[in-house]
Image 1: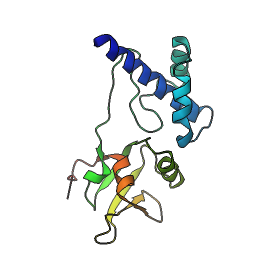
Image 2: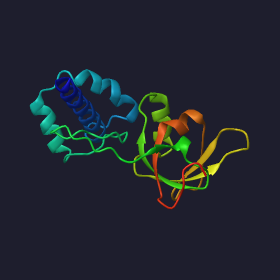
Image 3: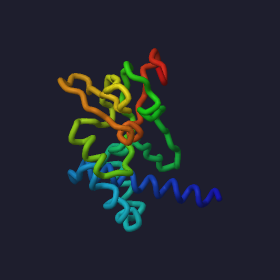
Image 4: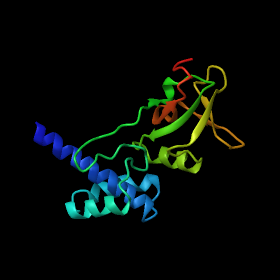
Length: 164
């Protein structure tokens, strides 16, 4: 129902604002915030959610890049595709990182992968299913297997093509 949709969007808003608050203000790491936000989202008042939004200067995305719905319920999702859909030899920007696996989030965080970072993508060893990703300005690239490649959502330079 429309009422159920509004409630769900507001719950997503609470959760993502709480995750952002926990990371930016309280210093939680990416792999710690999901469960904590799950507990808090049902306990905080609407007033507190609005104060957190104001304190954070009205963020549009959470630490993983997921869109934070506005107070009115509008959701502005960035145009992004899974890195698995991107061919080698392209430059991309990280738009979102799946938060389904806390260990993978820790891996990405430890290697400097975060929202807004630019990556150059190269093919890994033949027949390995691995891509190499080098963060702009980094000396070394990072090998990414299938699960990691599916967890990164990127925007592609408009001159690049998907699947090349």
